[in-house]
Length: 252
Image (cartoon, rainbow, N blue to C red; front, side):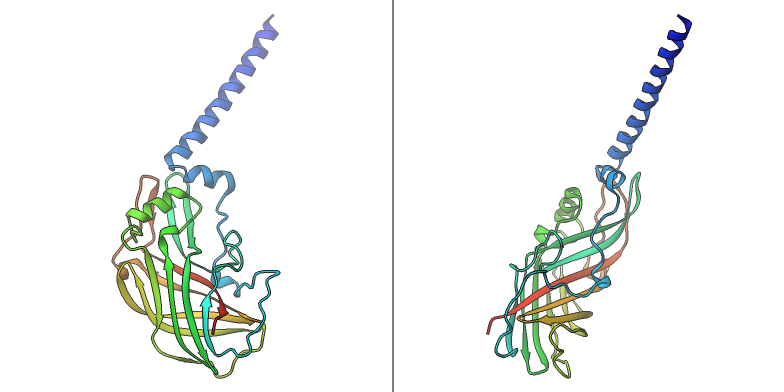
């Protein structure tokens, strides 16, 4: 009889301890406002920084080269997929500190990008890009919702734009499939504020597709805002990266 009681008491203590562990886990997740649960379960699995990779030509996608490379090339939204980031997109990357979690890199991207570049001989004479920020998506909808009302306030400032300031002489057109480095100076407009910036890019042409990728450091105060805040976010860096990956196809 004594043995049975002792065994039963042991089982009760184990169940009680298990319940305590579960309660602590749930409390940590709630304290982090949902971010904690995501982080503890699967960890920071956001996409790699674009600066660590060459432009991506979507696998299995082929577009015939035009008779001449001269003329207008437009951002193509139908090539690739945003699920593996092989499509055209513009986004951000910023470091944040989450309650009950610690450091985390927030990454958000929008596939709604329009724009064009004009090529004549070996000279890139014009570039104009517009990104729809209202559909920026990260690993957590709560963060995305905060950006609509705080920080860049996409509800009030729905787009970001970049316009090339002057022509870029490439010297010679790169061979098909070869990646080249290009520096572009232009005007970047975020939240209604325009700044002159220099963007380091890598470009590659494969048949009738020109892929361009790059990133640019952004200091939020330069554009009149700071990072979003909530009970789940302890702090957000005052700077981050704007990233882009664009696929152009020839139109004229």
